[in-house]
Amino acid sequence: MSKNDEFSCEMFSNKFFMLCAAGGAVACGTTHTFVTPLDLVKCRLQVDPGKYKSIFKGFGISYREGGAANLVKGWAPTFIGYSLQGAAKFSGYEYFKYKFATLVDEETAYLYRTYMYLAAAASAELVADCFLSPFEATKVRMQTTPGYTSQMMKAMPHMLSTEGFGIFFKGLVPLWGRQVPYTMMKFSSFEKVLEYLYTNVVPKPREECTKGEQLVLTFTAGYIAGVLCAIVSHPSDTIVSKLNKDPSASIGGILSEVGMFGIWRGLVARIVMIGTLTGLQWFVYDGFKVYTGMPRPPPAGMPESLRKKLQGK
Image (cartoon, rainbow, N blue to C red):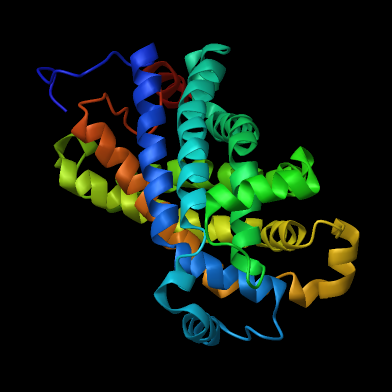
């Protein structure tokens, strides 16, 4: 990017982080809503494997029982919940990554950058899931309980009046168990894969790539990161789905019920969903930065002082 380019904000300013939040909301809210049908089938595979024996059978049964409307059941809490979560997650990651880097010198920040990616991602996700939890609980209840209302504005008051406020956060700890490892993998692997692509695959420096070429690489790195995320977080995803479907269930009881094989049920659907989802999220988020004229720092590069030290050895 040339020096003459004008940005809409300064790097790491309040406006920068606000725009990161807006970009994260757009990236997560739209993409999660887009894959609602696949998420619905995945949840039903997890909580009722006797009825929904495979992805394709799950789609067929769900469509026959309620048509297209049944396949998008839960889209509203999905859209609102993941928009809020995305805003907190992406802006939080950018903020914590910046703050953690300022605690040490430039060379240390580069050498231990992966640990900072992991710490920033975990910190951001712990906060973000507090926004997501009530809507995730509502979504799963709507998607997996036969005959349950398809309207979020009816479902949430009903859950509150019959089960109390705590029902919205009963799944928070397992949600952290699913989302924190997922987000740690999502951000750290994305950063490392993107760094690898620019260093070893792309035949020209990043600054010589067009914005379109950069966005393609962003999507590629995001998709690879998404596949890794799906594998790491899937067991906790199964537990979250079952806890939100049956409030009386416990984590230990669920593990005893489903066993080591059952905890991985629906993994293929989740890999397809999360791989596509994560790739699209990074594409939309980076595209939002381009559209709004935000500064987009390149992948981490070795400080010149460290390079000189290594060459002197």
